[in-house]
Image (cartoon, rainbow, N blue to C red):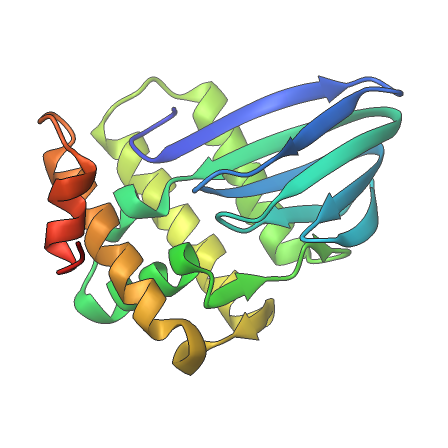
Length: 196
């Protein structure tokens, strides 16, 4: 992690390699510096090339087949860690992103603004030592990235259908985040939601 909740890495990928099917609770972005991939995300097959930005929403099942040697910058954003740094309206939006009621498209073909923001984050991460000013600057950049994604690239907004599930997930994730140093059980979490 370059700062709490944000991880940035440059990753060479080799033709013929496969990224196995998996999912995670974080938002993941790839900036395709060179090469080509075939990805499958939530049963949608997409080819991504140099200059594209790839987005894997939290809890989406995805995999990749590297068809040509490639190099990516990988940005992993832990929305639960960033959510604690904002007001209740923004926290609600982050909760919707984590719960799947707000999702972003999987491929962005050309967006020079978003590309530049991610490039600046990468340069800051490799050129500065870890300190409070770096963290503040990176948080600011990633709030700009998320703001642009929310304005331009939301493809699912299921506020009514999944709001209850999203709220329940938010309660549990916040409970875990606040109590991660303690021994937690399934009964503890069920009790928080008034479930057996």
